Image 1 (cartoon, rainbow over the protein chains, first blue to last red):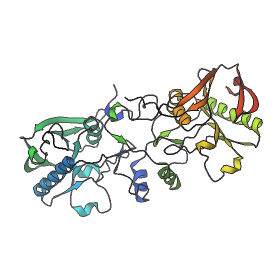
Image 2: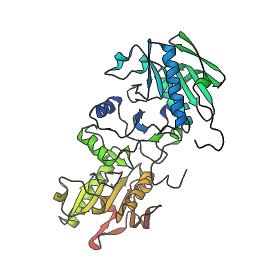
Image 3: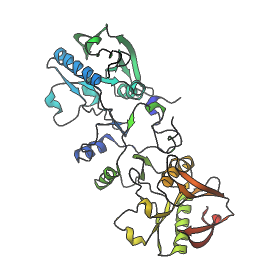
Image 4: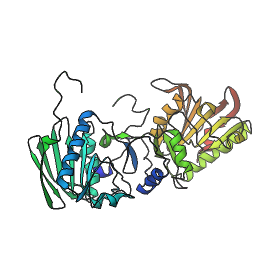
Length: 210
Length: 204
């Protein structure tokens, strides 16, 4: 079995997709070629769309942003839906991310993987992708901490200790429920802990349209 | 997987849940204008997905050029014989078939790409891409109502001739004839006969 890091993007019977480099993509973005099209990510050289967000998605993202802002004070940059240049063929745009330094450091350039200390993806229908291809991508880029918020399952997957190489992954995985607390540690520096239920929206009650 | 899998490239299993960004033709044109691709790169846009054309090896090039030369000798300047040139298939595809014949003179296309409705014959020369050429590509050309689609299977030394395109939900060709190397096939463009071609003539 091939590792997810090199998994084919198109199904069997298809030719290989054309792969853009990060540089090509940034140049196209600079030339305003992408315009207002879509929220795009470059994953292994191929452009993907970020899904349309639901109200619970936005609730979780905004709550987490507020919590992280309060916790990190001014030492770190908390970003949302902002690109990271993670490799020479990857420019993901995670739902939430934390980069080192100050906001002014990223006026002209996207943070690199080395400048990124935490990445968070919200996962609904994309959970296999977020826990597979995306996880391998962030691990290969040695991003120290990767959270996947499983909204339907009301859980938080906390991945730490990235391992690169041929089969990239995280050595430590903790799956936390809404009553659990997740310690917020950025580059070894503790910033207290966050209650998972603090940013997970309650499941809609039956009969109420979501 | 739904029955549309063959007609439209979806993602492989590891990418299920991720949504491919399907590049609109206008955006693809802009990318080409902005020289986003390297000069040596052969690319096609198939249902909004950029795929690489296989680098051509000697047998593939031989068959491609022989077919183009045979067509040119048969149809002269009445029709536009083109090779590895783009065809615009609204709304999301710009394939570059190995050989193609369009209506009108070659000069009619010196500044514009022909669209599917101007194509009378499209040929793909298959070495390793047979599944794609007889699957996604066939459905693409049939849905665009391109009247005749040939696939040269180099490995098996056969020619697949597809005629009578059928659009709809399951696009395909109503008639498929598979010719062996010694067969003689008629070249008929929009009902006009241009004399037979022996399959062996263009096989390496």
